[in-house]
Image 1 (tube, rainbow, N blue to C red):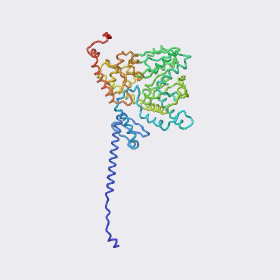
Image 2: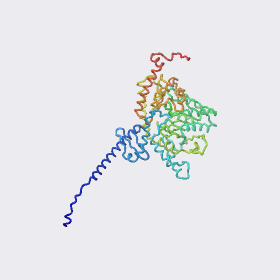
Image 3: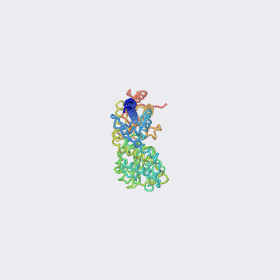
Image 4: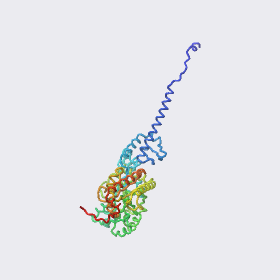
Length: 499
């Protein structure tokens, strides 16, 4: 006992390490929080640049919930689980800010990130041939293709069995026009179309003429619309097909498809429409509109390039002769292996378009009015090509008098625009569509097409309008014709001579 008492008392001294650890933990938490905040800010900077703040986008099964610009919150789960991938993706997308603004949605549209996410597994894991019936790889791909087929059918009110996958709307138009004409050539040999159709339809009709078919190219009114009475007069007992596009790719005019369909059905004539610029943008129903064949494009509705579809009615049945030989895929109408990832992309694009059609249409209409009103308030002698009351709002075609369209396009290097169809814009000839609606050659040469899409913002519209106003004024100041017009000289009374 005494020995124990003689031992020096050892006082337990509080070590500094626990405090140090606590401080380190607190510091780590602060740094982690700061890092999280920096990452969050970085994500929003990038997301502003890709114009997708309002959406919920899925990346590799990780949902990014972006509620509104004011709230600006990103789920912490996303940041922890997949931030590195997301940041790398957004950095790649943010590089787009170094390029011109994109306002050419009638030529093509960017791939919607949700469509990309749906496609990725079929570029890596599920690579089987959808026509291989003997193993799981083929079954997986076949199921994906059939699901995509159902999505495409749903957006136009069709049966999935009536959807044929193609490489795009050009191939669909060729199959529809040539295929129907060739199948029924022994009974009927007359086709009716319009002068403002897409070039692939017009060229298909010219090819059929070289094969002995008769083709009537109907003129259109100054508004770009087909005259129903004139169409009815053009129909004969030998007419097998009428082909009229739903929405024009240059001036955006929407044809009276339902009336045309009813007329053709009453006469027992097949009706084909090129709906590449309409599907996913305006409501379509093949039964209500009496459409027998419809062409669809993937890259016009934020899907991938290289995929399209052709709707072919089964009841009453439309017979089509295949225009290429092969393995007999797609009901024997379009031989060749269906690219699973592209078909899935088209199906996903249709799903997204169905969900957002009403919202997108309302938003694009507002942006279209904003653009036109801003330009018209600052410039005179600007003509809207087409019928404003029967036009898809995402396609705005304006002619700026006393300005050469190509010169204006070159001046507007900060904005990607077009002077007409992407398929014919390499030609220096004025647009055949504008000539068909009676536009003066000078005004046809001065036309610019503004293509407004799903990801277009108000800031981009204002920037484009202001730049357009600035350069039109500058180019007009350089024009002697504008100077003469300003002086009150009637240019139509002048007799010009060549030297």
